[in-house]
Image (cartoon, rainbow, N blue to C red; front, side, top):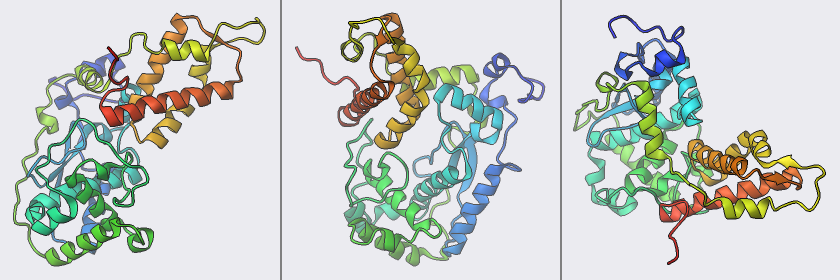
Length: 341
């Protein structure tokens, strides 16, 4: 685009046809700049000299072996946050509290690269081998006391690198009282080790200063429409009719015709409640939960199912069913699991 894009007055169609690199957004003079400055202040309060460079990217990230932090571009403008939530249900990092949690997490990655902490023998003994391959999914133990709990989804259990950065993030968080909170946990040993490491590098300059900002805003030349199409296709999984068995069990042919409600309408009415509940207890992103629920609602409408149950019973059974699908995904990498032959 040759002229400056006015995000406030563009129609949604015009906005979706805008290239990401043409968006007139930046970190400076926004609430994101305040968050970055708060991160820097927290590092200073811990007497750490490291200040990771922050830039706008397509998602939250710290490029491997780089010392900079990518912040999702949509957080730089209210209109883009609104668009992100429309397509993805949730705007990851929206709100100062959530943004700071993610900044501390990514700062852990950047600091680890900056001081080559992951190359130390004791680091590997404490957290594991960083060379371990990242899997598409991971199994986690919700009640394990071997790991801290910072980001949703028990993310510290994903990979040794994530175990370290989540532990670092808890250590860095002001007033976290981590010694008291994790007393009696094996995770406390990891926190004590991180505390020891940070004391060792206190006031020292980084060993590595690579700050190549991969996937930065200026390189993202696809339109917003294609960006979200790609993002949704990457994360979503389609289900033709495999919900039918569950739906027909939950909504059997009624024996009477009184007080019948459309199953699809019940699902629509309690959509937000179900999404929030399942996401909170499973740790899965709201977008994934919403995609599952949309497929169930669509199929219920196609089958013209009606309910004679109490609405609360329907909500409970739907929530349990979707949670089961999510957990299956967590342990197998698939929602539906393997077909029997």
